[in-house]
Image (cartoon, rainbow, N blue to C red; front, side):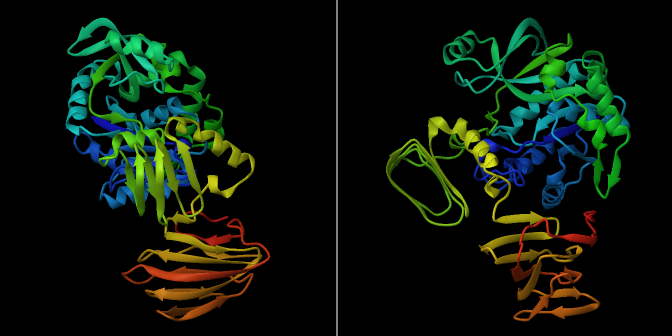
Length: 470
């Protein structure tokens, strides 16, 4: 049994301001109409013999994962929620415990959910090439045949032993300086480290237990004591927090004697920075990639992204310009690897722009902040057909709802009423209330909040179909 495993725990901070903690890059359509995760899910469909995937994700992203599966009309065998980030080795371990429950001889195809691959057929062929070795007990990784001497990737040096196009691994190498990277590429013996693996689930667990026993013990405890919540598997928090924070490379692959590498040439890109997006997208005659409402004059070799308004450039070269409703990034294209330093500065200043966009997605739909002041806030709220918000109250704010389109079932205290287009209602401070869309089209409304405190943490939930009760 071949089980795809998608790792979706990252936040993509180098793609700020588009990628944010509550809406990271894997859920955003950056190089087409589908998000990177949706593209990865679709790649799973090209694999012969593959069953429903296992997804390992941040607990805060669980509803986005479920929604993107639903949008493609796909199902998963398991969505495992990480309570905290502990790097890739523990994430693969809990996926392996889940895979072994399905089939003790299961082989896992480990894929980060945020990579781009142009040639899906070549990728599928390489998976077939490595599958026999994984079934024979080898821990197989995919080495990207380098197209240039990149300094932003780690490298894998292949050994002299070859079996059906798979090579033994001589060593893993950290990100090199440019002159060393040039030597690696010229030699033909080095590949970019893709972070993708083909592993027997039980073989991986046995190696992890031998090479990183503390991690194995804590990962097993977190899975054994996990609880099911709707479609999600919630790992035991205490046990998972005690897992060492380590990558699969450091914890297992660099130590094992069972490692092998399959050369892969498929137009791969880890989409790790804005310059990567310039690489993978189609360019115009001036070498520019533009997204959204953009007018670029006398501009060359630049990436310009507009999310909410007109962006214009004049007389510039090699820039990255990314606009969202609440933030603007202007950077030299050769400095975009340092965007993370801006994110760290935002965190240090406790700025909201590092966490979420003005438009925030929820399991029932979305809301978008239109106006925010000290004493009032205006939001646009969209509730999906058949969805409902929690039964809740607020200690510090009252709310006015004006229906723009659709039908709303409103619970306010002991009263339940139906509202339609152009009708409104008032929710007093401290009153239990709930909003539901009983219709077949999205419910759209404008919410005006007034009060002394308007933070999202002023919510006391009493009942919730999504398991978010206080």
